[in-house]
Amino acid sequence: MAEDKKPDLRTRLIDAAEAEIAEKGLMGLKARDVTARAGCALGAIYNAVSDLDELVMRVNSRTLERLGAALAPASRADSPEAVTLALADAYAVFALQNRRLWSALFEHRLPEGVEMPDWHRAEHEVLIARIGAPLAALRPDLPEEAIRLRVRTLFGAVHGVVHLALQGRLVGVPEALLRQEVAALVGALVIGARAAVAGGGGR
Amino acid sequence: MAEDKKPDLRTRLIDAAEAEIAEKGLMGLKARDVTARAGCALGAIYNAVSDLDELVMRVNSRTLERLGAALAPASRADSPEAVTLALADAYAVFALQNRRLWSALFEHRLPEGVEMPDWHRAEHEVLIARIGAPLAALRPDLPEEAIRLRVRTLFGAVHGVVHLALQGRLVGVPEALLRQEVAALVGALVIGARAAVAGGGGR
DNA sequence: CTGGTTTTTGAACATCGTTCATTGTGACGT
DNA sequence: ACGTCACAATGAACGATGTTCAAAAACCAG
Image 1 (cartoon, helix red, strand yellow):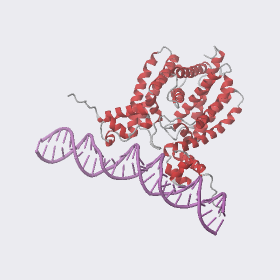
Image 2 (tube, helix red, strand yellow):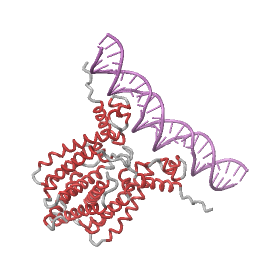
Image 3 (cartoon, chains in turn green, blue, yellow, red):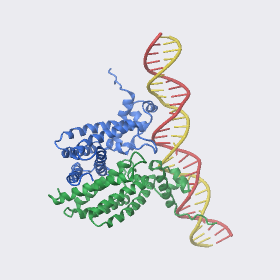
Image 4 (cartoon, protein in one colour):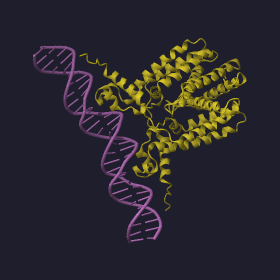
């Protein structure tokens, strides 16, 4: 009898939590369901992680990594504008295809006054930095500090549109419409950025 | 002795919930704290509203109304571009000055599968419609359906930027920087929209 | 007052996340 | 083989929280 080879209990717990979130959403994540799925006792969670919040952040780590991988091919487009558009498009597609896990990235909140641990904040910033590269090429006239701000703006704008489209009705957002919407946004932003660089400069 | 004249119990409960959210954030809202502040019994909540979720939505109604009032003066700017910019600016300022109540508008989630009641969804759409008017003037070439989509996009983009700026560090987002960021976003979008209308049209 | 209707109450319940004394496990020395 | 010990895993128990509902209180017409 080949018994199931059991990975780390911590890994099994993160696996289980990921599956639970993917099925029932972040609010549907219950300690007892996770341990039942992982095949261990309730208290085992607190041997693996400090609390449920950390468990969610471990799942979010994976999602961020998968999102990064999904965004990687977009960098191979042949102009900064095309890369920006491809990134935004890939972002929207990823969100649509991983609704609940993607939502968990932004719906999760730690208790008031508790700061996100550095290891997790860094993961978010890696993602934003990846998006930043083509924008830096789009606006070579701006100093690095201003670029970082614009990247955050671009990311926030795309994210806001995708988020607004997905919140509410869980089904019924046609993929084509959302991609078109994001393309229109990024298109306008790119045109605006180029007009600004052609005209007076950074301001 | 002039006893405190007591308004509706329902009103007192919404008042109390609003104050609790403003002080401790949405996650800090506890049924027992609300009733203690309102000066009534625990179960009284369920005579006034169906559950805590509805109580939050009643508070959000008020916030939406105050937000609408804060946005109203922006409509008096003298060009569609100026109105759009003023709206976005007023939106950012309102978010900064009403952090927790504004956050509650978008952090609140009903249980999976439960739809937002129509009376509350309508309130959100009223707000978006108010933002839509100047954009319709900016793009007179588009049909009404496309306008609604673009309005949602514009709103989502501005909202996303403000949200990203405010999430995380509760203090330390300089108001001037956020307003500048939003202005840059809307400026680029307006330029992009005008370039599109000057060029080929809706596509 | 009286009877009935409505409002208010708060103890009790169900469901959470979290803790911790107890139990189980396996590696190591003798 | 045996005993020992450090560590991992367990799940009953605890406290916090949203919700219910039988009882009490308040109200009001006749």
